[in-house]
Amino acid sequence: MPARSSILFLATVAGLLGALPAPAQSGDDGPSRYRATVSFNPLLLLEPIFEATAEFRVLPMVGVAVIGGGGKRTETVNTGFGNATTTSNLILAGAQGSYYLSGNFDDGIHGGIEILYARKQIESAAGTVSSVAPKSSTSLGVFGGYKLSWPLSRQVGLTGLLQAGYGWVVQSSSQATVDSKAEPFLNVQAGASF
Image 1 (cartoon, one colour):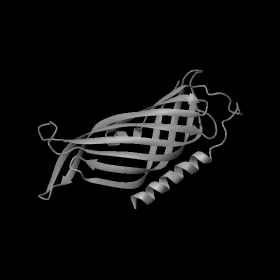
Image 2: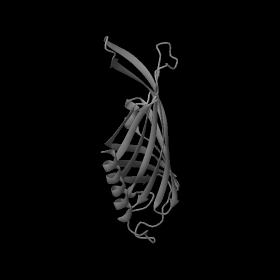
Image 3: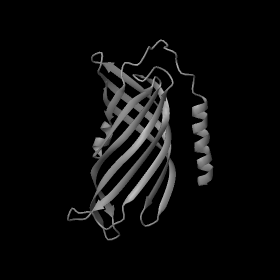
Image 4: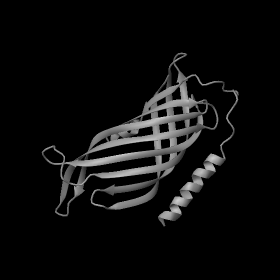
């Protein structure tokens, strides 16, 4: 089953890349005004996790982004002897590549690939890292989205970004347990372009 899902994933990526139009030659939208966008995901603050993304224009229709973040999450878990509250530290790191199908780096429809790594370590009641094995997950997915910028000046603008996609997630721990699955994802970002 995992081999079939991998083939389906690769076919989706190949189809997306094969369907890309030729780069625009200064179309109606003109050249991009901005060279970088820095944004954060306000929905993750409810977790509370802070995730920031810095996207850089490398070609007129291509952006490359780095993703980083983390937070401390408190959860109630069933231990078999009743419920217990645990606190865990979460660290996120990743990258994205985007191709702007319409518009340009400032705003427009885009598609791309994202890889994201997350590591969760449970703390003991004393606030130190516990001996419980850390859990990690890595996801690789494709997405489509829309980016919109509102100019504040010639050099700076407010930016909103919405991306939806589907990724393959592999979860593991140092106790050699591995679980993999395909699942959808949603990125909602707010920030500034300059």
